[in-house]
Length: 345
Ligand code: DOR
Ligand code: ZN
Image (cartoon, rainbow, N blue to C red; front, top):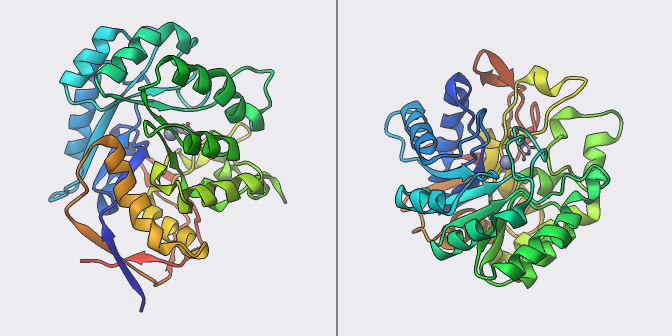
């Protein structure tokens, strides 16, 4: 049986939620990832240092015994974030700020209305070597949902990079050829995370033969040429600028299978197995370790994890759903056979 041992991966984009919901899902990530960058879009958002430190404690308390999983905390950028907040965050060991343009996605109501008003805050982030993580979509209702990432690049990303050229930016969950190109053409201070669903699916998966709410996430799945561009990005000559960030975003089953279904794909259950399948399908299994376990750590200025994990080419059936607080959540590839498994130690 084919096996593949790699340095333990990190997930640089993870939604864990809180309370019983978090308690139900955190072990799935801890089982495979060494670290994860925890997204701050709770209700209310994690926008102060005190909130982030308290949330970190709750995450650590929810971990299984003997887990080596380390949550890396981020703060939710708001119109009220100050230069002082950046300094305090740095001193408290928080590694990043996350931009949600107001109204862009789940729990983004407190997001930023005009990023250009926060230029001194971004300059301070650059100064303090803190990362700026961005949900890269405009929220202008005039802009077609499939164009929102490409328009964000022109209206926000390029001007911000011109104004704060040394800002360390992670373009989160990129979905388009334009975003991949921007990352490749930018300096070493610009990188991107790529989710399993955007590497595996295009918008036909979401819409052909019926609306399939479990494929709905934001940024929305794009046409096939964009999916192909993402595969090329993570396997190509600029692959060192792209790394694993699942954007695993669990929602209760009934909130997804709904007349107004919410955005998010829950991939944490089998994340590394899915990435292995994608890389293998594209004859790039040899590039998986850099994507999953090296590029992100390097960009974040962290050492690589000291443990390893072994993947085995043995299929597994993904459950139809798993417990999620007092509800259930449907994982990515629910009910399907996927090709790789993790070898239990
Ligand atoms: O699909 C998404 N779900 N995209 C996001 O940006 C947020 C996430 C969530 O928190 O559910
Ligand atoms: Zn996210």
